[in-house]
Image (cartoon, rainbow, N blue to C red):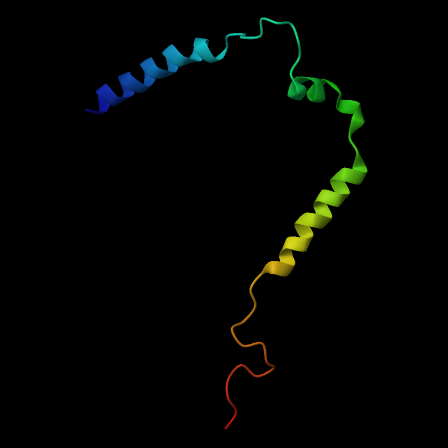
Length: 76
């Protein structure tokens, strides 16, 4: 059973490897992602910092304690 599984996985890797590596671009036009990756010089620090502030703002949505008083238990 183990040998069959190893053989099946090996066959799957051999069969899908060349299919994934094929170039399907026949038009000669670059996609938006390809042009963005080629234009590495335009890293905009402003948009990166705005995104970072937005992610830090999500920390305010964390749920606190069920009771937000100074003493969460009743004092007797």
